[in-house]
Image (tube, rainbow, N blue to C red; front, side):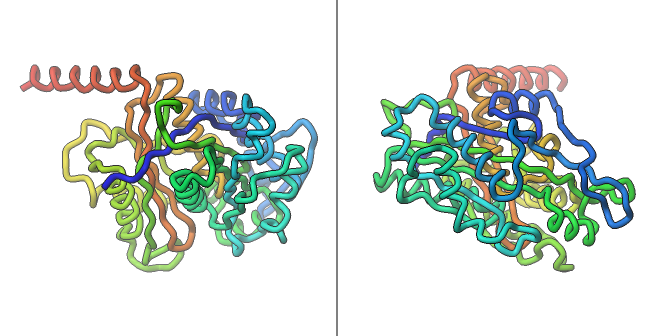
Length: 364
């Protein structure tokens, strides 16, 4: 039985390529990035490249995460009366407790700092989810439960993260996981925050994007384990999301994923699709925001939602149905299904498929 849908009503985003969702999504659509040398250096002395968020008022550490998070939450809530804003729980994903260089007491002070930045009291059900990239999917699941149980009428799923700290960069550089001239199998560290305002679709709720199934699983051969990778965890997570959405993989038009430049993630994504796809598809391209934002950890899934929301609202998605998947460095994996609801996007897909079918028949 298909799971309840979630409507994406609004989004907010701040990253190295913009300070609002429209700015960021326009830059990503154009393939722009803000990769530049940072004040940090590798063990060999060469400057490390990263994607830094340049705020109007410079800040660092937890204060910067709180400032970025408050900006994207305020962007989501724009247009709602002040009294209604306090009735919206905020579920914010942050880095895992064991992530190298994670700020101490982050989960204990982040919500308080966000309240201070916003100047309002957050809903009592607001919480911090310390599960890295997969935390965004956990937040989606918890938001869906709150909304279906009518704990609230709206909920915000958010994420904020930064890899641009000395301790984080030192640890990943030591493990040869950062992209450098002498290491092509690595990622560019970044920082970002993003948020999505969600509700249950209805006659009084219209949205250009809805979310269907959500799936979770554990990978028996995680990054760095040395075990043969078969993408069992990602396969299971995708199957779970598709089953909840009531569709098959062949019904998805495109994918969006957290691949960041490391070979492991590309290999895992390719293996999962190879094992699951049993029908010939003309195209099944892959979007990966990390090309423009760098590695942004716990902010990845909300950034994906912001990109899909902008594409659906402005009718430039290459197809209406997207499969999203992501995973942590450990065994946790997650997947979700998103669908654009705008008539123009649906008509564009039908037109392109009809044109391709006609072309195939003409070539036979």
